[in-house]
View 1: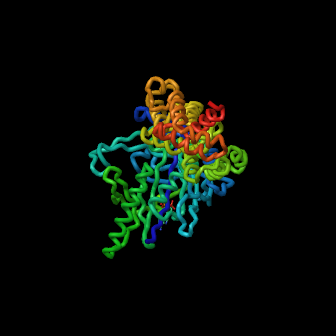
View 2: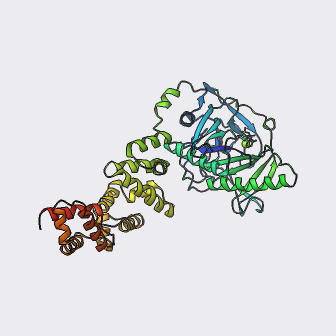
View 3: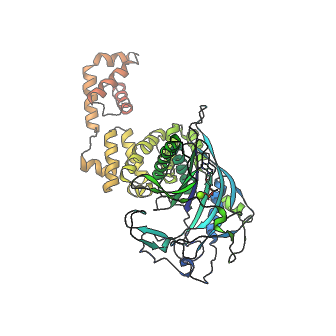
Length: 476
Ligand code: ADP
Ligand code: ZN
Ligand code: MG
């Protein structure tokens, strides 16, 4: 089936103040309507002043997405009335946005054996966030709405894609990749509530598109699109056309509902914002370019080459820049492949389970202590089960690896126990020991196997081999 999906992604920028006033953007835990002033409340006569840092961040994003940054950018008024927009217009951009024509790569099957698809970015522009309406229950059952203007005037960057995405799963992958890039740039924090909101456009079999507005979670986008495919398919089956309309996603019920017929550009009576001058941006582009760090695609390539890890591990480790940095700190001190397994497979799993971020976790397990855990594991002081138990204990209660081993009596194999097993095995297999001394090197493998059996697989084979050799070659 022919599915076309295009996304309009609104990302809140991590500036200290709002886009056109000096109100603090740190409102996420504040009481409603406490981070407001005349400008962001839209009182008559209040004038906007552009936040320079927000412009720099938008340029940074445009460059990282491979866009052509424009010479000059102009803000426009988009006129419409809604209770979350008290001025009656939103300051946004129109035909002079920050940038056009970018590209984002996602790891999705192209159908010809390649696992990389390119999604074209139409444009990147800036706008202010409106306030937030709150409903008791859901939008279509609530008796009244409440409004909070703390969010009003928050700096947003809107990233619009071409309709290049072919499935709800690809849409979700794209959003994951976009989040990753924005976090690398240090201009966005995806953990903040409502930091990314998406309008998802979808059409099937060349029909008209439906636009599902304002979805605030990545999973929500995927679910809303899956619902839309089913709904649109059913319409076609009954010989009906999909209407060009704007729909709302009901997160609780996992369905989309019709809100209104799709508006047209001329409905908004766009015109240049007379209270702001055009902004020349070409002068700052080179300076901003210097601030762009290594991005996910490059980092992935480097990880593969530098650490010889699997492609799956590389993808998993680069997604969150904090995890990538943590991995590199650990891998610089101990086997990079062992580090990859324990960070990508074990630590990330434990973080997901706890809905915890790497930033929080690295306070509980600093990277040098993670190295200590892996070192104990390599030396056979602890088993894999023991290492996992230490990681869990440290995430939940804090503490240090050594202390936890002592206080919790983990399933470890101590040195004494190892020596005992080696003694017993060499005593019982004197003949094999002599074979080895006589030049039959393969005899050692048998002895290692015996010790492993003795310790029920809890010892580290490399360590067993080393200790066996010590003993046999010292002639005892
Ligand atoms: P509007 O603001 O009116 O929705 P935009 O041009 O800003 O218009 O956004 C259009 C979005 O819809 C883009 O993300 C684009 O990729 C997507 N889109 C356009 N045509 C289709 C289509 N036939 N099927 C799915 N998505 C589409
Ligand atoms: Zn304000
Ligand atoms: Mg739209």
